Length: 357
Image 1 (spheres, helix red, strand yellow):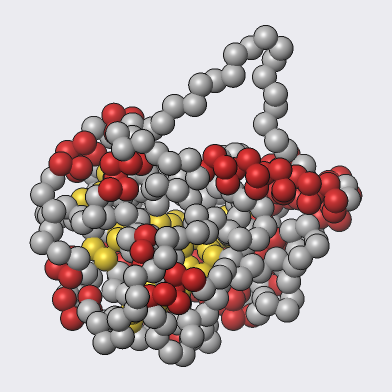
Image 2: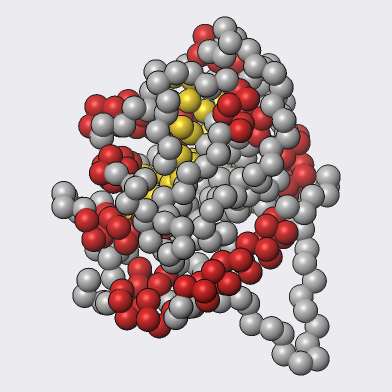
């Protein structure tokens, strides 16, 4: 490519360095993200809400700082999708997001040769900061799709809880897609997701973005929507625009023009995004970490927490009560506590820098 990935690799140095950096990030970030939030914090309060509010659906605030009203749940099963990690109670979203997921799953079968999608985290019942694993997914307009295709049979709740992630990265190589697991169907699925006008961005691992830049031979009009970011090697993250009429929703700046196969991508193949934070100056007091509180969110979010709930999960499932009871015919034992913490099991662990999305 024009900006020379080979040079970027040489700049980064040996793979042992990459491994050391990855291990350092993993150790620090997993520890940081798994601290139990206090019950009074925004994470604690929104994480404890079991059902959405009554009333119209409205995203409030920004993708990484907000909440939502009137959420609906993605049915656990459909002809072309299955919801994963059910015990997290994170399959709630704005109706526009849920409708897109159902449509995307059907189009994937028709146009991408994909047997159906596995849907990961969308949002909590009232949005807000999640107990662990994400900084966004707060207003019901984000959703994670596994790179693992849906099996031909319906999985039990236990299987959905325990199925391991499959990374698209090659072991022992820095930011390299594994040709043994990556297929052209994966590429078609990504470009299909990017084709919808309401889709704002799709977050993928930098190696996957590079793979798409190097190999996608079709229409590249929407390739710029694929944005490289930490993690996202076992799933991709769809973000849609603020729905029409959602006055309380804060939009994100549009993606830059072009296909994104430029210096902004080359950046991810340098040491900069993977470097540990600079140590404080001698004598300087390190900043005191502070939990995000409800008062840090848009003012309306306090009222969202106190609003009346819908009668039941079935009543708020997209498509009605019949769609909500899909698993009733094959009940499974209560799933064990989730052990993977919503983080990728292989590859660089996300942190909150840099803000290039």
